[in-house]
Length: 410
Ligand SMILES: Cc1ncc(COP(=O)(O)O)c(C=O)c1O
Image 1: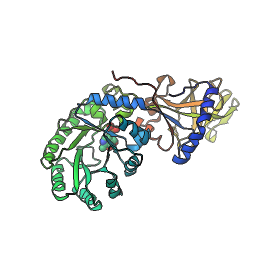
Image 2: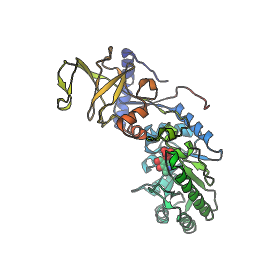
Image 3: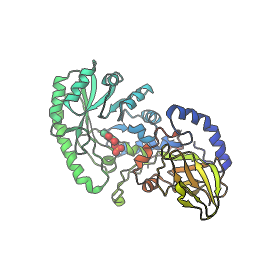
Image 4: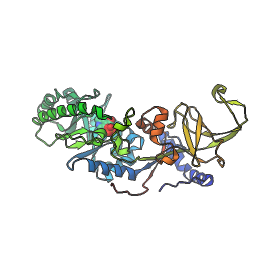
């Protein structure tokens, strides 16, 4: 259970009691000792249930936990999902795939196609399913690995990032199946994210094309095939791909709905809950700036009244803050402007907040809208996507996992 101390003394006590553990973790992970990210695993389970209810019963859920589980911490998220019955996880880097096995994750793991050295023999020995995009790549895997290896073929339906074309997918499958006996082609998948109802006609057209391609692919494959067509956006918009028997949600698991920034009215929401509950730090270095004094980088700021500043031990290199004006923090329930963001520190103007003491907790992001610093608001202020902010926590935050309450999906 998260302790929500808002009184300075209480916050101080909490900060001190966890500081030893935070320091230890930060040495091991290069995290910032005083950047605390609170992750609500119950919200993750809630979103998983929501997704399960939104797709047909026979649809396998391949939970996409790439990029350190979208910045929420891969290990705890993977353990939580596996514990909740997820049978497939998908990651984007060989290191993450291997790390999952080292941590004792036993469910199936799909490594998406990637660029660079993959160490296929290590992956295969760890029972990782390797995503490939051509016959040549399948052949190279078969050559590198002495034992049977599981592969998924990625089909490019229009994103233009990875995958064999829909036109060539069946013939590539035929060659893999007939010429590479050590390869087990277990699945076919695609990825075509979108966020706007106006994009639906194109998406549906591309998915019909994927369906045709899958029907041709199946003529070459005798064994059951996992076929995955949709990620978060397809699920949130309730799309159906008749040939598919799996979905691969990522963002939606963490409460990020496909957001249409230009046309919010055309955004579809499934009602998922933000899994990141709060990001906070501590206040130090309180000082007074006399009225009329210049301060800040190059003396760019002027104290229009006697000003009280505090220092945060987080800057643009080690937190979710960016070097841009307009960001705010929440102290003792009140909003304070962040007036400077440097490499490792930021300065907050606490003039209007009586009772602020050094050691006081400073909230940089909270899903509770009463803090006035929700992810959407921060994304707007920083002019970057919500998922960019979340993933910027990786290797910076010390994570705290909480399970506040179990709420049934309505
Ligand atoms: C191949 C693939 N499938 C699924 C996903 C999950 O997408 P989303 O986070 O939009 O659900 C991703 C994420 O980038 C991906 O690369």
